[in-house]
Image 1: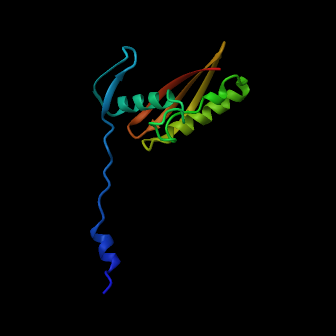
Image 2 (image 1 turned 90 degrees about the vertical axis):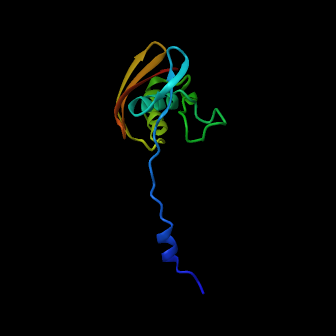
Length: 134
């Protein structure tokens, strides 16, 4: 006698629950870890960590985590600006809580580019910034 697969599938369906974003609070200015944060503050911290971790550099992280900036060193700004937009979007959209990255603004100074952009997340919109030296 063979089991009825439809009964097995129906009985084993589990509800998928979204995990909380509660995490330890990183105080970047004081270089300390304390208390907890959740919601929009946790997302700001996630964005900061993703954009400050070079992709493929640390074995502890998945190859989907971080940003690729090394290949921009020494390149011309006409190449760097559109490439920055692409790598920032690619890095941040790996997180399921982030649905869109848009409104890019670039400000070129001596040896760096200041990029300002908006990140659309499940908890709200976040204005973010990344400074890249080249």
